Image (cartoon, rainbow, N blue to C red):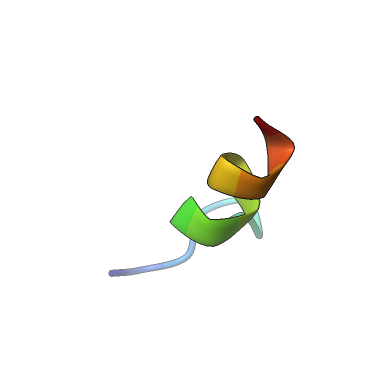
Length: 16
């Protein structure tokens, strides 16, 4: 997966 804007799926999940 390519990083866009500097956030990854992991960061999104952690943000939950």
